[in-house]
Image 1 (cartoon, helix red, strand yellow):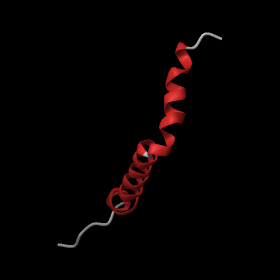
Image 2 (cartoon, one colour):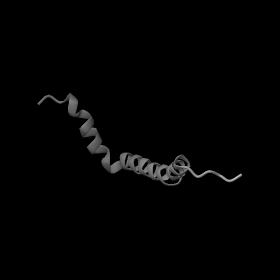
Image 3 (cartoon, helix red, strand yellow):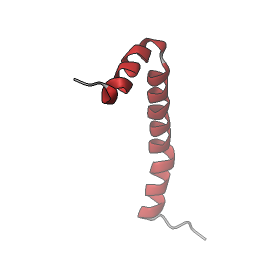
Image 4 (cartoon, helix red, strand yellow):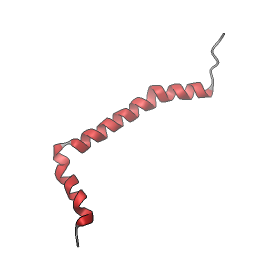
Length: 54
């Protein structure tokens, strides 16, 4: 039997081979950015903004 090539198979292969590693890389980059010690003061300031009285 020959394998039937369909749009669904091509789309599934595209997602598995391209988009999944791309989004994993983006997620890792966001986590690394958020956990950098240099950004601690920026995030602490942003966390206190709703509690400030202007």
